[in-house]
Image 1 (cartoon, rainbow, N blue to C red):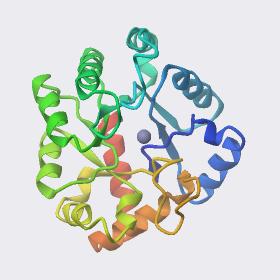
Image 2: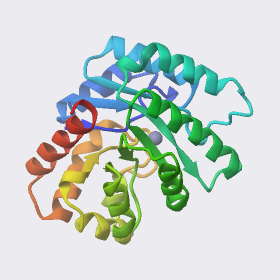
Image 3: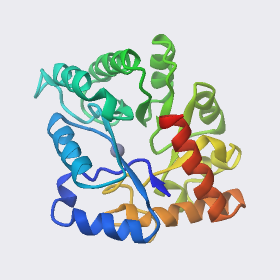
Image 4: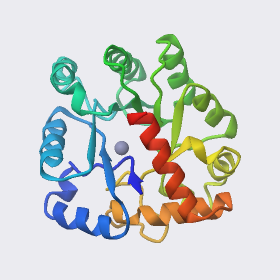
Length: 253
Ligand SMILES: [Zn+2]
């Protein structure tokens, strides 16, 4: 199975990355997508890709990244994509987050420029959302963005899910669904076909139910596959087979 979103480049994994990858492989995780968040992160991601097998990369500026602290970050991304666009699978993690202090107007501007870059290199995007579905969909429409991607940590209604799917996006299914209180998202996913989903942990964040307060790792991905199979009333094997095929279709189709 594939962890389509894990931040293995972050300092939280510096001390034991080899162990984390080996243990994850033992639990059945055979491939990892590390999305980018900052210029220094892109360097670490490239190191990891050289050191380990089965690692896919995306480069981007996360909406949490404060570009006012590093005004040349966008030109660094432009340069990085020029050089490395053939060895990455997407632009991301990019998006809009209405709960952080960076003004939305600033975030929208940075998102717009990254959508342009993705279009230039014909790459899908990995989208971060938080109280921002409406604005994200507006941005995709404005740019007439047609390369699809993944809605990271999808949460929301069936209607929102379907509007992304119509635009060629897959829904990233993570630890959220292991919590009974996420009833709206669980309901939305149970109404959408498995053909539109990929699995993800968002390690080291988004702990799976029962592991709150601990560092999350890709080792926990089977718990998410299990929760999804229960929700969709299908086998875990089918969840793994289909989400793997979806990932391959999106990035290597
Ligand atoms: Zn993330």
